Length: 414
Ligand code: ADP
Ligand code: ASP
Ligand code: MG
Image (cartoon, rainbow, N blue to C red; front, side):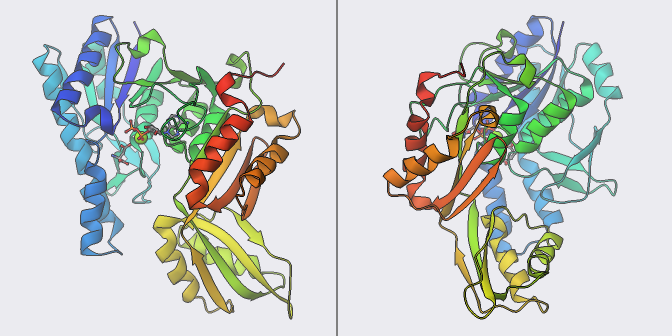
């Protein structure tokens, strides 16, 4: 008998028929003798609609109230899932974030889970009950509702699995697993049967939204195996199909490049004509950090004229307005002007094999050059290379890189 967390994403619970389909899968796992905790997302499109409602009233809404609004989508599906399970003769009960409680910090809109109380849930699971939990939501110690950032139900699921010491966390979604690139952009993308937490972490943080980054971090820390699989296939998580996210040592054959990720959620800002002297970067980026704006790629141009230089960096598009306001209000930094380009995309090549194989970066630059794609910013780490390009070229870049690295052919390191 295994303890399994089954997470169903937005498209997997998009309407009543799909919720019933998901409930059938839960029942089958129960019939196999497993203890099951179900984590559900909101019906697909609902969270976007709720976010829009907030923005319609005010673009600078209070994030505490935003959380109250957007957390509601998951409450609906949790209740409906419990009803669908009960209809099938299974004892099931929904537990909202505050009822468990799933305690988080107070960073509203992108809160982090700090602690989950599991005593009562274990009691219920031991008694044969299915526990149904809405993803995405938690509660602060001051009893305010929080949400975990977009895609946060993955994190709720892995956190529940870690807290309950589950044997596995099954992420049911609308694709068959984790692919070498987004299968919606690269039809020839190949499903990866096993991937290390480390590579998955890079892919997720670089834009492969199949798993929220924080969920992978949590998987790596707790050691909970994460199985990503399709809701719309007849098999179950216990059949171990799809992609297993696991420790590097469990993967026998390793690839040089395991995948290509892309992200269209960033915007580029250039601060033109700042003084080229010590402390400038600090006085530019400290206020942004204080405003909780994550700066990603950064380049400082060489000093060109009169000891002046330009700084270019990227921020999430959703934070652009706040970033610009922060910079415009800076009293401690003088600059000539700000140039903003929201139509950029980051394309990244990820692979653990890069540690031991040279030439990966070179191939990326050559491939993009051959397609006439201009690279605006480059950043690298031990196992990834990212470039910033014009947004219109994203699909072309991802497809060209995918075939340049032979990813459709299942190449392994010899
Ligand atoms: P859910 O609603 O189930 O959480 P998401 O939309 O958040 O689903 O994530 C699944 C989507 O992630 C897929 O439909 C796919 O388009 C996208 N995706 C991006 N990169 C990848 C990748 N490398 N492998 C699989 N899916 C990916
Ligand atoms: N419903 C939330 C979102 O759309 C959380 C999730 O689905 O993971 O971001
Ligand atoms: Mg998701």
